[in-house]
Length: 255
Image (cartoon, rainbow, N blue to C red; front, side, top):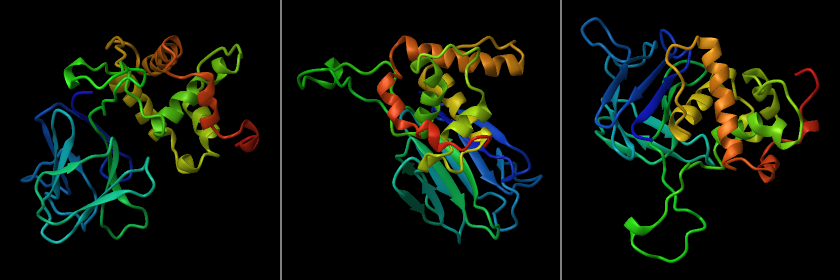
């Protein structure tokens, strides 16, 4: 992946926003105003007009905290509680997480936050032998983190085929949410979050190209089918990965 994907969920600003930033590009966030335009508008009176800036680089992203009083948290939702605190006036703090949640202090009952999908973390081919030079080593064609939530979403999408069923269609977004509900990392997973993970898989991880003129609903269905087809064809998701999912009987009927 080159660049980053930034997603502001509905309820954290004027409206849901998804931005794609290439290397060298920046996006500002804050409450904004006519004289202070921002790409991510956060609708809370505790947020500065210009609260901060995101900068995409070749292999990571940086966060600048432009507030003079408030620290920001960058959480790793895929980890065991890891987070970074970016203090006031800190410029260009490098963020190491592949998937991050940026949390700003507010008076709201729910966190004021947005999500950032970082540049692809590159892994060596696990079957490559010998030390060798960096240039001579073999990289994986599809670099996926099997501990990440997006991989759980991918396994849930592929599950019907891996269990030798003959489904008429790929699982829908609500079906994926219901299937993963019993997993500790997915207790708060929403349909919108599943859609974001699907976009990340298709656009960045698996680099699937769909026609731009496809209707929105057809494009979403086509993206799910293309992701599943490629993951199964190249063995990215295999039968042993089903152990990552909650037991089928752990999902309550009708929920």
